[in-house]
Image 1 (tube, rainbow, N blue to C red):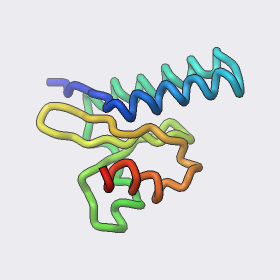
Image 2: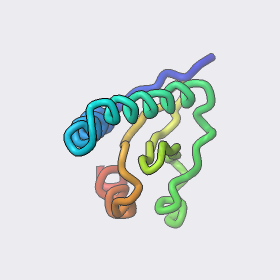
Image 3: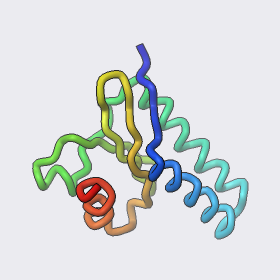
Image 4: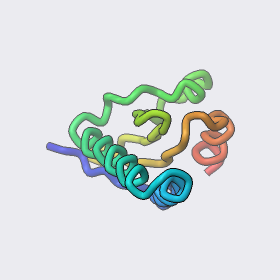
Length: 108
């Protein structure tokens, strides 16, 4: 049975901001390509949600509650619960992910 994939408000904002940023900085076609590729990651998570790795920044703290998949350079951070996947954050992996994960996940 497939898992339902939900985007938190923060993840939905991340996706909108990312699409807008790429559309302005690169091209609308590139922005659409990235959006579709990330959406394919959501589809894959629906079938195999435990395939993602633990984010190394959190694993170093002993936290195994979250997982991530990549569409390079973007990292999609999520949590699996019951029959659902909750996407919590979509971020450019070239950012300071330790600080971003702490601010968005651990302090929430």
